[in-house]
Amino acid sequence: MSHPYIKIARGGKVKVACIRCGRCCHGPNVSLTAFDVCRIARFMGLHWRDLRGRYVKAIIADMIAIPVLQSVNGICVFLEVNERPTCTVYPARPMKCRLYPFLPCSPSQVDVIYLDECCKGIGTGELAEPPWNLLEQYCSELRIHYIRLYQLVFEKGYEPLQALERLIDDAYMEVSTSP
Ligand code: SF4
Ligand code: SF4
Image (cartoon, rainbow, N blue to C red; front, side, top):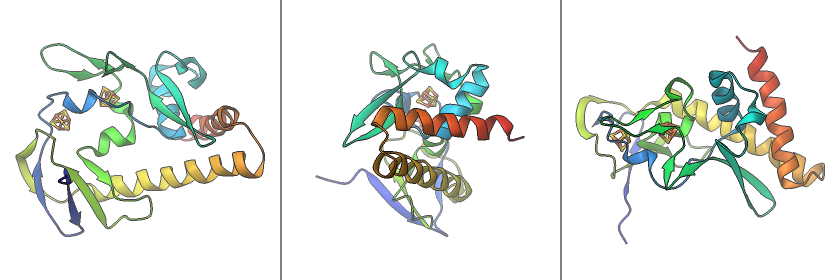
């Protein structure tokens, strides 16, 4: 089976600009970090707990609860489907969405990145380097998210969902008090 991702190292350039086809907002639920959840809540003027169920849900696998965006009929709950698909939380969209069509290779690798060949914007726009700063921020948030979550579950004995909620509560305090 061929790999649908192209690996790009620092210094490499590619032509890709979003043409707002909305394709990447259909399909598997977007996974989030606690920081993503808090930014979306703050943008919507809600407490993060008000997002539960309607906008965000948790998938539990191997004692770890993974927060993901809700979808309706396979379409992200935040996508407004009209002539031009629009993300209704665009300024606060998850890091994964900001980075796409690029994806991390692993949370500790910030000098290489994957480009998803399925993005319809490939070949358009200016020749440019991938968004390395964004990759670094995302990987840093991912590492913090999972280090804290694993500590809560495997060291402090929280149940998976309790651990996730505690983690987001803490992040919510941090995000609410940051400028
Ligand atoms: S698939 Fe690519 S071009 Fe289409 S909305 Fe997503 S990022 Fe933009
Ligand atoms: S949050 Fe916005 S950009 Fe991300 S999948 Fe949903 S509609 Fe698309």
